[in-house]
Length: 308
Image 1 (cartoon, rainbow, N blue to C red):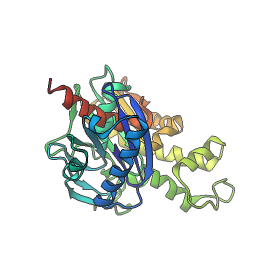
Image 2 (image 1 turned 90 degrees about the horizontal axis):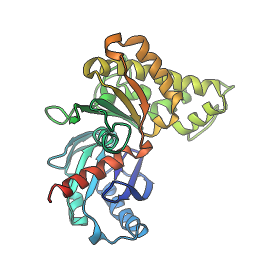
Image 3 (image 1 turned 180 degrees about the vertical axis):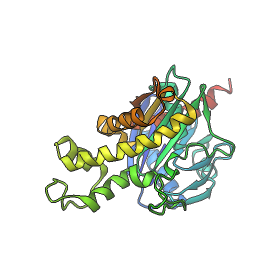
Image 4 (image 1 turned 30 degrees about the vertical axis):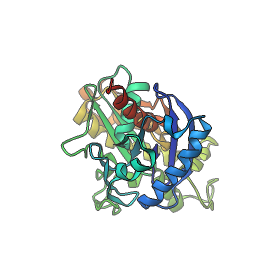
């Protein structure tokens, strides 16, 4: 399962991490108790849809945006959910009666792409997820690089504007305030010209802006160009630090494809040192929006197979 600030995705997979049943639901209440309650209720229905009973489950994998202590199954901090020191494994395990693995959203996506997506055969790449927030998972020499306290990959909270907006994390000018789904909607709400087909629209989503760009709305296309340029410049820092072979983009916003990726590639080419950007590929996730779901499943599968 993958928990987000606005939506949550649940899936049932086999031992090959192939998704056999899948559902999405809105996250209307962010308290851990409410989220766990939604997970339990919808998991039962999903298992029925897949023709399974709870007794047939081998384990549960959970993908969460934020700082995660995977060993303890604790979400240390998830700013977009308002969570701090949430013992997620402890909350879920009594209801399922099977092992529960918890992983950071960026790391889960990187693991999914490494094992089943465009990261196969690539020892060094960075998975970047763009949705309500922004995160990253760093695959370094075929191993997830999680840092000294599992805090590596908080890409959305690097400051790109020291005079910018205050973030929920306490920092100022965080990248996700300029390049996330929320940022795209805010840019339209604050700057939309009368001639755009988005003018006067209420309840906008980033997907609406994407559809407008496909209909040749110049302002919508400009928004994606601006977001991609800022994101590309930020990615230059990742390239200089880690020298990856690929930058892999996942999450809902990445489904915009070249509307987003083209300006990222342009910025990388313009601002990265030639020796660092040589052969760096900027690509869309091979698993689409399911990189994190598959990565969470892979954790469970790996734990299960390691017992033999």
